[in-house]
Image (cartoon, rainbow, N blue to C red; front, side):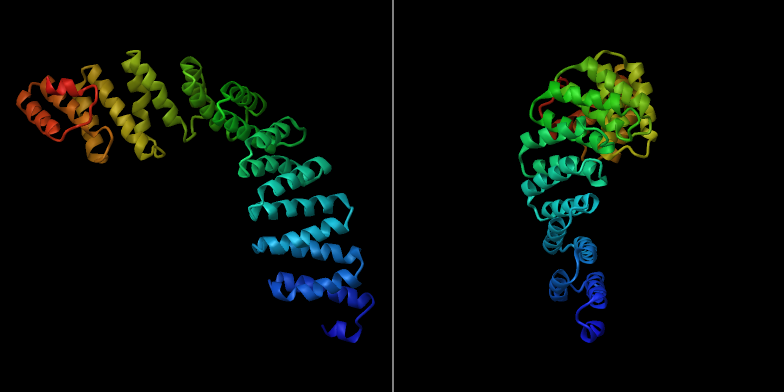
Length: 352
């Protein structure tokens, strides 16, 4: 201010105005920025003014002042033709509109960055974000088009993968399962070393389950378990495989696959109770009643409100009966039936 008071025009004033705008922005004094900013644009050459306005825009964005940041980014876009700065400012403007909930506008701006500034650092992210913005705007058709363009683009790296994953999910939600499967397969072939390979294989497998393609689903779950053994998705994949093996009567294999899961620290409560239940049922089918009893007792004690509780009580009664304790079995069944259990396939057996 002192410098400007002494000499309001000239080179010194230009530098003073530039520094004043930057200091106010860095200090977060946004209410005091309008006057100096207007003088900066009026009296200072774009060579000095534009970088200062650009930095102020980024600081405003970081501070959550998205409306102000959008105005500043817009000024930079209008004042510069330099490709790198223009791409950065246009991307910043798109992000502001996205944060403000103006998703369709943001999508168009991201598309401009991707199409008009190929090769710039912001282009790859913008190609992906155009799809994200269209998706947020609830325009899945345009989102699919944007994601597909990003997936098949060149030089987009991890953003092409992310676009493909979102594309597959959108197609699956839109009941376009065959197309979704094609995209999932492309991702596994083009990005075999991706840290999200387990996610792709898992989603593709469950898509096959929904389409009743059990054989293909089993192959994908097996691949997930084999290639991503430390993935948190392995327990659910293993359990799904074992449900099929149980139906096929391969009880020993079910036990050998499921028992190690109980030692995994990443086994959540719902999976834990499901594994205990399936182990108990499998042991019962093999006539291993001590093991079956142990699994069902753990299920009841560790998951008191389990969806399997009533059936666990039934199989505990069956274990009592099989091990020569009919009175104990009858008492357990009497109590179970008094509680009015849901109509499950085992209920007639309980009455019998």
